[in-house]
Length: 88
Image 1 (spheres, helix red, strand yellow):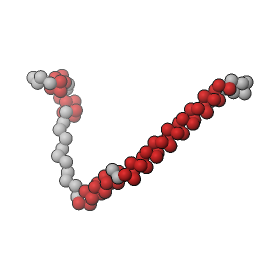
Image 2 (tube, helix red, strand yellow):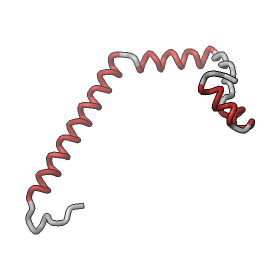
Image 3 (cartoon, helix red, strand yellow):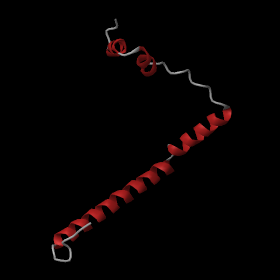
């Protein structure tokens, strides 16, 4: 019996469960030259300064729109008139 937790779990499970859950991964298939180049180019684009700046602009826009919408919702709810008694 194994001393680690996975060995104990595998010993208590039915055989077909243990075979499915704790199976080893197959060896990675070597990439063809085309897919190796595609992977490298996508990695280069993702890690470039342009994409980092674009991601920063998107995050700042998202934060700004959330702030604006939350502040307008709180202003609407503070109004408290008869017209604003029901809010979706």
